[in-house]
Image (cartoon, rainbow, N blue to C red):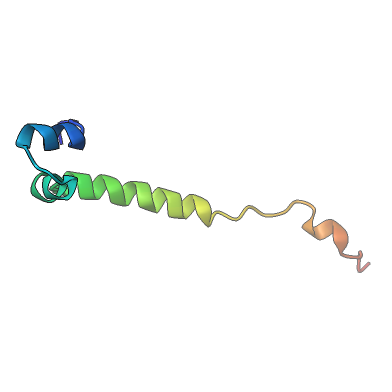
Length: 64
């Protein structure tokens, strides 16, 4: 949470495997969950944002 690099924490803690460090120290709090969900929802919304094609009606014949 404080921004320390995991590999540095691994060295300080004396862990031989980064998985141990990440399991022990990589806990998320509710604010981090909320921030991740906001990012995800923004990404999903922008990926599905379909803008109308201004040329779509020009291909159709005028019925009048």
